[in-house]
Image (tube, rainbow, N blue to C red; front, side):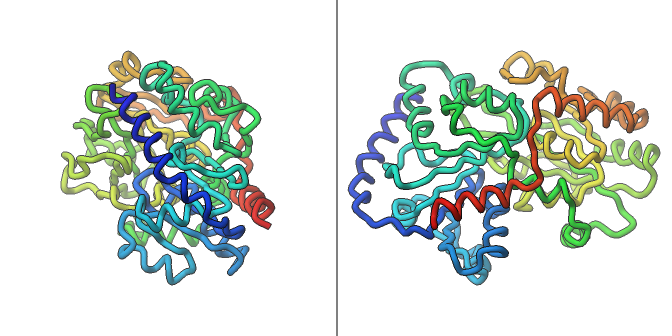
Length: 389
């Protein structure tokens, strides 16, 4: 029933917006749409920054957000902000030449063939299933997915398995896929040490301190695709983790956590002594700043794997996840050392084998057919320029 109601709402909105097709398209207008929390982050941010630096004054860049008052500084830099799903938002969308998104948000838009949609997606590798595998494979839900698939001109891919999976799951034609990686990974494949120091200073990490980032993904209420995304009691012992890291790698370690941007219960159950970075907008900055990472089922594992820095997997509900969540790549093949309790996590840290870890990461990347280029942002922006001019 939820799928039918969702589909019906989209069809109604499509018809309501249809008269806006008479508005003239501005050839230099682009929408950079971060569908995950509407923050200035992820792939849309990477594209925006490159355009500002390399195409000054040539594009009318529009960035939808929830609260424009929080992003006045973007306006000052030359990026127009508009409230998501406002009248002005729909005006700019329907008059834009390019609509770039990291997830969706365009299936219900009555876009014209002369408009160009680029979907960068928001996760590397091929892990949690989505689309028809996250709900139920019904004609209604397939029609819902096709509304977006038929409008997608380009879908970025980080690996061959992702391309295969999304062709099946989201019904996007294989011809739309561009296997060049994600814009957001460029900065971690060729890290800027000055930027790293800047971020670490901003979040309160001293020069003599090392940072471990715990970045778990969300859980769905009752494992239902359409329910809210929530945090749980993850059960990790931050003090024990830091002691193990200090013993294995040396130095003084700080423990930080960052919840997924779509989690609704953001004040959930973390100890006061840890650093809460859930409101820090850009995960890529934190990956750059961290010296090690712990995650559970988040595709941020793919990004962190590209850095070569130590990564670990911790999930007290690992078996429940395996039993209830369909994945494209079995959890047993994921490259991070795995733990379901603090004893195992401590052991994995103390016995961390750097050579074996690098081999596992390399094998995983090759098995999935990784195609990160480190130049994705440039390639995407050149494509945008070619489409617009």
